[in-house]
Image (cartoon, rainbow, N blue to C red; front, side):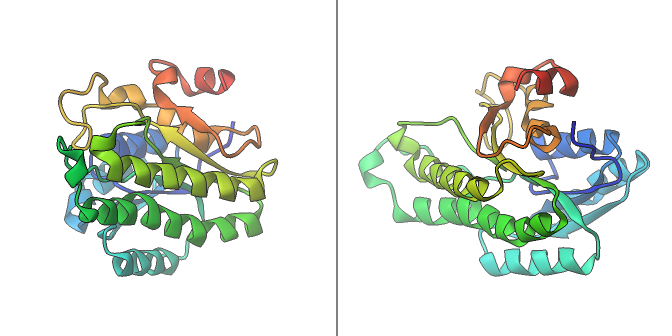
Length: 240
């Protein structure tokens, strides 16, 4: 198992939902945290919570739809002068369900790709070279199991593109102690998934974090979080 105690993890979309639960889980393991949200006010409470658990924490803000904002956030993280060994690209955006899919607006693709593909890619390209230099690190990108749903084409296409980027980057580090994988949380009752979803956000823990703790030197996988619902991290890792 990859040891996260006293390391630094960067989590996007950490103010609520699965990102918030991931932050709490990592803090329980003694991992220091850099927590992203769209506005610093959104993560104030989370920072206080995890600090009370005995770890260090910082909050950073960025609107992932604004790539200049993403660049500024990355510079602000660099200015913290800490070494980020774990990245959890959790944040995402789902566009409206288009019943008349032939009228899907181009804006669905534009915003989906900026938030779900380009921003996570920028984060990967920022931290991956440092991990390679340090000969250790974990990146977990969040994908989706949605397929062949033309009514959500912008969203599903953006996740498919993120899958391709992740697999391409994985080919350069596979077999090393720098690992980059994908996680599919499943359809959960979050702000993104909606209240009709069959799974609770809690069911995605520890599954969405398996890629951060795995130590088998394998990259480029999609790890389905719901496969590990109700398991301990040790049990989950044994199932890989």
